[in-house]
Image 1 (tube, rainbow, N blue to C red):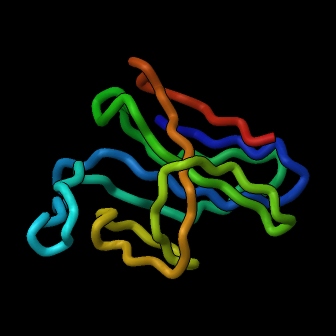
Image 2 (image 1 turned 90 degrees about the horizontal axis):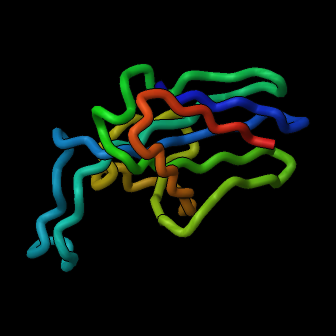
Amino acid sequence: MLRFVNNHATTVWVMIEFHESECHQPDASICGQVSLEPWQGMGWWRIDPGRSVVVYENDLDDVNRYWYYEAHTADGTVWAGEYIEYVSYGPFNACSDLLNGDYRIGMRELDIGGSSDYTVTLT
């Protein structure tokens, strides 16, 4: 299970991305890229201050050791990283090669090790 806790003063919106073998792999001959691992992107969860939300309910280590997320608030606070994705402003749940989103974000890498449950606390 992957849970996010909002210990920030304002509402937070969170998205995640994780390995999903059912997702498509981009065709290098079409995209002009090397073939990428299949990834599933999901968002946006709204988390009010002092609250938490489970964004993935199954065992994390059954999926992958590495997960990715981005979180932000209306006041400009951002929890981001170097892993680029294009996402929509509205809710989404799609393979990353099909996201074709409205804007660019940078996701943080989350190494869960061998944990089946993990909590990210946003402060």
